[in-house]
Length: 554
View 1 (tube, one colour):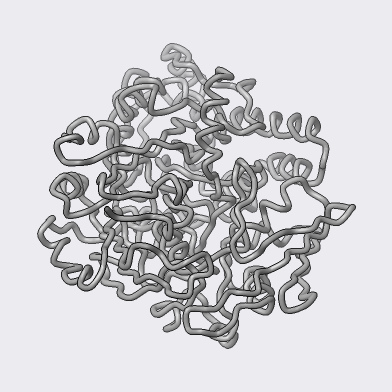
View 2: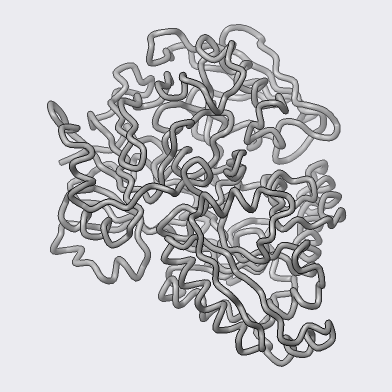
């Protein structure tokens, strides 16, 4: 990767790579496995999808009257957050966008530093094991109850309870023990980790705080009535949820950073990209994430639209289920048959819109290396490996989100390229919710699948995806050396030593040939020009806006 590209993207990412190890359970990903472009890869109730297609007219009827008596901002999203959005188990993109509207974290850990929310500062002990957060004393929950350290302790302890299947469990609980959470006083909380690690502060940030006074007697965080009428400290209060249609929020008058300028904020669920494209050009919606090809089809100037491109540190990939295709030579043959550039150009149009990663880390990572096996296209080598493995005439199935235009294009190109090596590839476009439910079954029969993820800044945030005991080891591999390398990288503070460890980790992972990185694509947000304050709100991974209270309407 050219250094100029790295510097450019690092600057772009410094707007806010705050997706630190975002996660979830029960079909959702602890890392926000996300949509390559249009529809979320996992789905409502799974990784957000499953919302019924509706017409542009139907969408507008769904929130008719939302703007009565005030201003309304409407953002079209391609999946349904579901009815069980909650701080502990929610980790999909649209669920987290909802969480960010209603709740607040102690802080957001960004590429350019920390942005403070419920906490004002943190002190680190000399041994780098204890982090003491100093909380704001002027925050109230949207029901009027005061926020304090009890809420923080309660949230983190709930996240550490293995019975709760919390998305951040693996970044708080380790083989050496669990992170100790201690209330020092009403506005001071100390976290003591079982070992010193350079990534510890990031692991402690980005966790949203829930109200103890409402959840203290809850035994099932994912399914309870409180989730349907949440009380938070965020810029907005959830006013209405209509499955498959919309989520409506009203401004929180007591938001500690100041009441939002926009009165009503609506997430309009529009799975069909053509419907969304028409809606944003007609002015029915104010914002929508599009593919470069979709933007090229629109009359931006004539419809008073502008675009914002930014990096999320996202990696799109194809993965192979090792249990289904156990022969390493066969997996390598599949990889050698592929042409990444042709696939990416078909999806993203030009290299202005994407970078090509060579490993599981995004190219902007300070630990990223190109010193790995990259599987440059070599059809003859692919055929040779198949012959050696006795797998000539190989037939495989590639599963993906059938409603995702980018994944559909990727799948079609992969099918054509594999055919050149004599591999027959059957395409299996599924409902994304059903796909992730199947992937989460330990003995599922999915052979290969497409998806993407956004993790944190530190490589250790990728652990749930690639460790043998990682919650989201959907390739079902059993390469214990990966776990050991993650452990070594986590437990050293020396930067050079960490780089060497993570370089080896990337090398081993690529050599095993179960993960094929495709692209690290920019996210392209189309916005009506009547919307102001986009830069002030901050464009960040996963949530889109770091603080929606800063948005304005002209």
